[in-house]
Image (cartoon, rainbow, N blue to C red):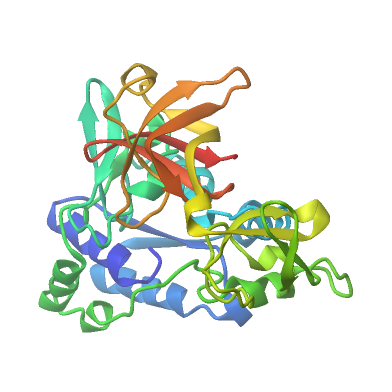
Length: 341
């Protein structure tokens, strides 16, 4: 229970379905000690008559998510904190807390669906294409998936707000959607500077170069740029350029024309496949490397160094190391991994 609209309506729907509900709020991140979200969760728990727990896991979140977030940028990669949080932290903590309390099922307000198929449980895309969160859940293991209930998967966000309003929870119905990363909802650059050790010039100006290494202009520091970026580069050429590569050890950012930022292959680490036989070497696999409405088809194979290789049917632009790839068969999530190169 985050205190927001989605998890709050999940509580209402679970109660309506006849479940005995216990609420858990994880204290992941509190900017300047602000805990309004926690008070909202407690208020809903009181109004709905459910038991509520608040667990302070800010230390875990700092180590597993925030430090990872900053370190990835310093390594010249683009992090995916929401994927990491869901797969390594949030659902693991919820699962462990449910076991401690001897509670059979675990639920959240994610816009996705979980179904059984051939003896295994899979995440499926939610019914609302604008809110579908299946992309973030490819790394969950079967013990977690078997105990999951996702009440919002068959609803749109508009319907979810209507449910809250009809049940008299007008404050919940009118809450604004959270945007971006929970601990860094806006531009990540000021946050990155804030999190770095004081008086250390880790981020400093360097050179933009072309693909042959020729000087193009000056940049403000390589962690401030991401693969595929076009805007706010600060270089004036007679043609548009995009970030193609980032070289941290040289504090260098490579720029290229749009036609040169496409790739036919990529390699994944930290991957998961629920049933490798239906994925490896098959032709019907949708590969998404971005959260929003982006589909590519590709062939997935093993490599000798325990990586997955994805060969796209058509070249794909701006494949960014550090980002996630999610595999689908139709709307069913069959695996995924982290882009290494």
